[in-house]
Image 1: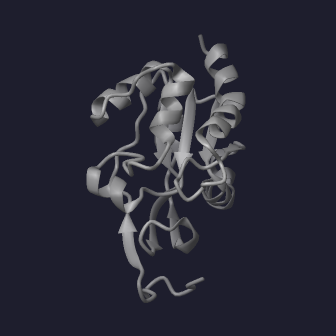
Image 2 (image 1 turned 45 degrees about the horizontal axis):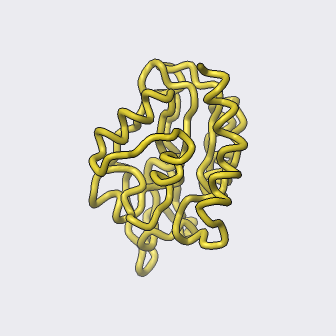
Length: 178
């Protein structure tokens, strides 16, 4: 762990979050990732890596066909009361590796929490959950439910297994919000 925030480790890049959160006043569920991948930052939308299973998973759970363009994806999430953002505002990172993240500045989640009646926070993967607990929980006063990562790095989880685990958490929340 790099304790000197001014010193950049070899192979690392200091990056600030560049994506706007997805939410509106009707959002009830907030899904938090850790930090956008290189591919997501290049494409300027969340879960932009073609092998990330987030959009396929949401399509299954919400019984929706997500279009390729970001605005369509965003509209579907919002129609279902789902907000999307990340735990980290800026960090030092090597490529897209969550394991390499250091020198974290957390996101100020109050922007969403004050604008919408968020009833549940879900973290997408262990890193997002660990960083949420370390940096955000004390400020929000809320626990988060950890769901398995949709990243291709989490190859131990098939799409079917992700659907079951995420569905156990997300589907009751969606039903309660109807």
